[in-house]
Image (cartoon, rainbow, N blue to C red):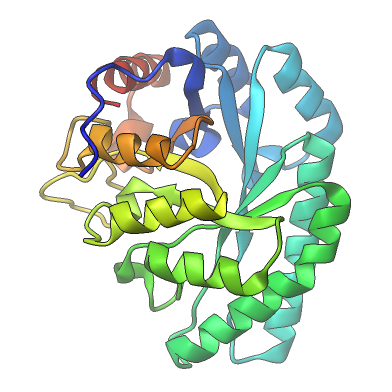
Amino acid sequence: MCPVILESAPLSRLCIHTITTKPWSIEEAATRYASAGVQGITVWRDALNGRNIALTGRMLRETGLSVVSLCRGGFFASPEKEKRRLAIDDNRKAIEEAFLLGAPLIVLVCGADPGQSLDESRKQIKDGIAELIPEAEAAKVKLAIEPLHPMYADSRSAINTLTQANDLAEALQSPQVGVAVDVYHLWWDPRLEEEIDRCGRNNNLLAFHVCDWKTPTVDLLNDRGLMGEGCIPLKTIRSWVEKAGFGGFIEVEIFSLEYWKMDQWEFLKRIVSTYEKFV
């Protein structure tokens, strides 16, 4: 096992997802993140509603933030052909949005449907991503397959382990396609270190997301913890991704009904302090 990194992750690598501070508009989030020393932002597509996307991207960069990625594309799986076609159209729109925003990456939540087998959903996911590769390449936007915790295998993603994500990325054989490692979804996997190393060998680790797993978890979607608040070995997993060659932004992605209710500036200060202490 790789030794755990004891030093704190540098603040220069901290990125925050707009969904983490959901009550803020993207304009307020940008100003507040920058004032707290954060240097990266991942934009959720709902934050762009009603805005000129190109001008929003310019605003983010003028604030001093790097646009790390756009969330999210995916949801390719459905028994209904028309729904699969609509998903492809929406992903094409996401590629266009990423291009206008200046985001080099789209994170894919791949989708699933309880009305069909996981194998069929996985085939549809592969076919959907393959269809998008030429447009992603033309836009110079990469696609990151994000495996989700198995509790979401019914309707959110049929890709549930990093092994499956790596297998899919390798099968697609495109430099536009890689994987995203989110500790919330993958910390439990006994093959995680091995599969992160595989990412390094394939040079396809595109994103690294952090938060923590609270015990007890009262809402499996909207009760993620601040770093250090739960049982995820964050420094250990960070050591694995860095050993695999990843030196990009470390992205804080927290869905929390509790934290969305609190003063978001105080929450942001806690994000920065727990990131510096526990990541």
